[in-house]
Image (cartoon, rainbow, N blue to C red):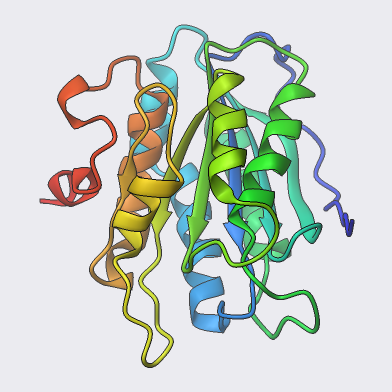
Length: 243
């Protein structure tokens, strides 16, 4: 397994158990992710995590902190840690994490080998990261960002079942596929095959221009104390949030 950790020191001195939510941001860097899509994901996460909307949502939690890690994945066994587990308790923490993502995140310059899309591996990797997290937050979330379906590794249904059994929530954001000739309702695929657990949802996008704002709303929803039950698991949830 390829593991390349960025040199990011935990900016917050809060103890690991002083967070309400722990989120694994698992970002697709497979062969279909070109420089434009890589920038979209990299900048989208950086901008969202340092946005006033997300910081305000964090401040409203019981502890005023969340924990995040940002990892990139492609084929089975292929991953890279960009940001290890780090607490975000305010703007300074968020800006350090955002800077690491912008500077160290995938640039989409071409995957040389093992470049398929193993969402099942991304989920299993995230399970391991949450299981080894040194704390016990009320919400443990796997946040998948991808532009394709599972085409490598184990069946995604098995990995999803393991995450749900462990009490984790899998959410997803569907990056519009830009490959010519590929036609698939990726948001519906994620809704049917990937997301699961308490209050799970998928954020669909009709255009890449909505990615950053959709991701910001997605993170706010994930760390907020309440979530409307009637929207849980809906593939159209993201569309309603963006209206």
